[in-house]
Image 1 (cartoon, rainbow over the protein chains, first blue to last red):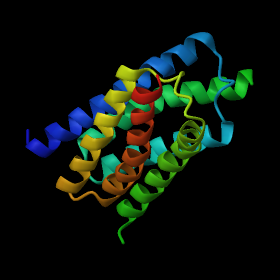
Image 2: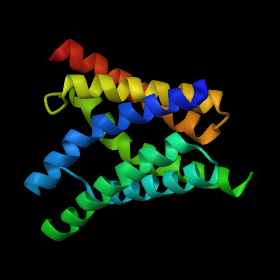
Image 3: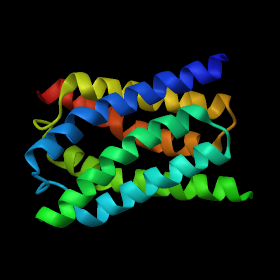
Length: 84
Length: 84
């Protein structure tokens, strides 16, 4: 594995792991009152586009990080729409 | 500009723009009470690594998105440490 891929995977670890506790808490409590719906739609769409970009550009760290983030972001978005 | 770069720039737009209102609010109010310091250190380090990864792998959208995010994340991190 090249140095650049290792740096990418460390980057993916940092931003994904730092996102997860808040995401898990939001999913557990179903409390999405602090989240702006338009901003969260934009974020989820952005994450989906990063996933597509990662796959198309052959960037494994970008694809992996955004695949994980997208799952959690999509669940929170569904909660936001359902329980708002 | 290739299709994959356009998708990457749209992705960068989505995740960066959705991050900015909350970041600007946090910077204006200096209220970082809702932010976990260890998680935010991890996030800021992750963003810095994404910037390095973007530059090293020649991925302009990754570099641009994380350069912008890093500036705001670093300001918030300084506030978090200073005003906690």
